[in-house]
Image 1 (cartoon, rainbow, N blue to C red):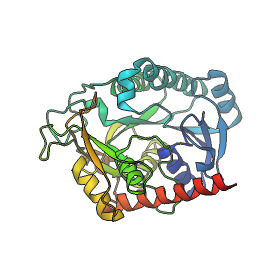
Image 2: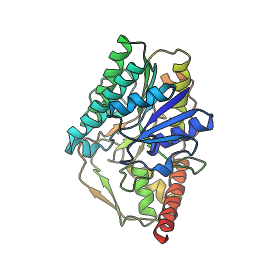
Image 3: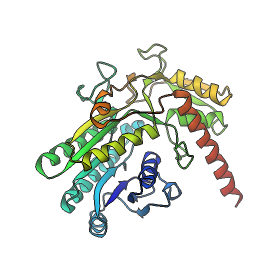
Image 4: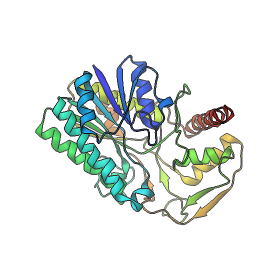
Length: 333
């Protein structure tokens, strides 16, 4: 049987593809390469360049390959952009997901893993936030993902179809084997931006708001190493294949770091005291967002191995240096 990975040429998706290939799974990657890279896909996987909103293409893939599971990463993820261009997010994250889910039901694919987000909680009344916390997203990105969760819940009630929605907190770091990482040049992830600034790729970086109700006034987030996140997906896949029931799980470590703490860690690891300026708050940013992640440990047997901010930064910095060298080599050719 094969696994269809949508968005498998992107940051998190490419890590999943390698993890599946390491298990000798047959992997089909569907990616339109709008933000992903063909070179980031494991050579062991089959890359199909196309869109999840293309129903005819999906029908052909399901008819051609014996796909028993879908891991759905494809989507738009930039919170401020979602505020400026909400229709893009409802089209890509919600409407296209509906097309993918419909094709899966039509083809009889029973197992579906969805890349959701902690943004569905909005500004939690209690941190760490548990899965049963009120769902009140404050930006179109979070709402577009929550709508897909609702669709999955309804479809699972109506069809022979089970899903796991994994609500990511802040994903960072890179593959410990150096095979892939966050490669989008203009990505907005804090640790990536800080690493780029440390390497001189940016003149300076910005802290967006220092007047939040947090210990140092900057936003607090729960940073999870991408490899631990992928381990959660692998556990979810095994769970569903064994007949596990549908569910929603947080993916985080249960403690957070402020923006200033992260920047200080990048400065320490890199040995570079780079320029940082304070700017006004960004639209759609909650003050603090930390995971209560007991359920995924108990029900899926998830055991994170890389809960260390310095280690996360070190892996991210190594990847940025690799990308820098790669880009130099391509420019020289």
